[in-house]
Length: 254
Image (cartoon, rainbow, N blue to C red):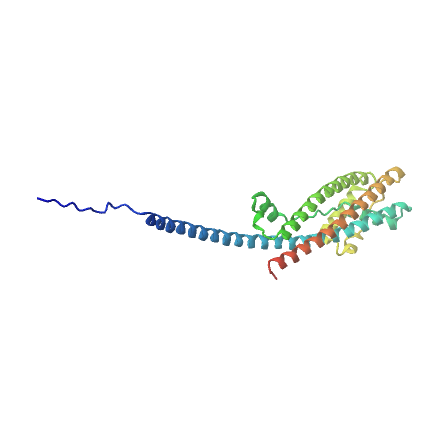
């Protein structure tokens, strides 16, 4: 009997099948990668927008705080200049009250409270990379650096003010100084006439020229320190305003 053998397919895939399976898998992974990358970009752009709005708010708060500090330093400059002049002439009952007023005003140092919460958060968390506009990043970094250096000048001025306060304690009556402070706390600087022309002033404790000259010398130093910081604050206010305009321009904000 003649036996016939039939060949059957062994189920093996040829190279074309492997190629198409690989291509389909590759396309699926690649498309997933693109979708995930696009999602991450959208999330980062949303976070960037949030941080930009927060930075914009910080800059607006700074301009307001800087304007108030500038006004305070204008009062401080007048107080230092007037005190030096009054201590250069013979003390009378007419000038005595003004000496107390100006001497007390010169002790008031208003520190600039820098709104840096957003920039510090971006720096500490490594998220500054989210801000895509290089000009904005550079401007903010430069502003932050200059403010940090300004804090050193403020600390030096505070130290000098403490030295000045010790000097005036040997020339002016402490009770009178305290009563002036209470009046200012009640009436503020807007209506000094009603607050300060009260018959609470006592004569100067001494006319010792050495003690008077020490107060004058420290007042002159405070005048100069205050003037330097005054002009720096004006620069900072201009810089903050420029950053606001730059952010609005780069991110098409109103």
